[in-house]
Image (cartoon, rainbow, N blue to C red):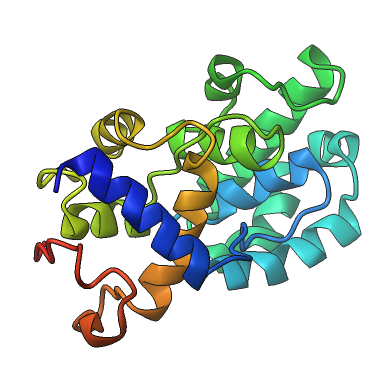
Length: 211
């Protein structure tokens, strides 16, 4: 089975298994997803969803966060780890949104990459979830599963994985495919334990590469 054929089959299997898969970060405005994605680095989405409640209670708008002392932001986001650098990036990002983008999140991938603390993974998540544009989010689940399944050839570099997946994943499927990989990676194709291949919906078409 060729990679593209396998990819299409896996997409359909995961659709059936996880029809409602979506972003697990809570947000109701684009800028809040930007904040949460930055906080999610080396931190669980569940913890981020708790921490941002306190952050937005004190600083409920882009302008409020842009004007907030970095030390006060850091004190709130510290439980997410890397508090100083994350607070600094959030503060700088909100100031740029306020001063250069009329307090709106840009819908251009290249413009998103110019924002402090925003890498390709974050930019793709924004593009896909907020703006409904083609996106592939190469988080740890995506990298692990696509290697195991044989869609990627032993590659762990996020950008290289993303570019390789673009060649075999239909544009309109990329964003939801990655959300489903997260669900599947947490429930079945796990990282910290042996994958549960016996209950996997893709076990007959997966290469089961051990990485």
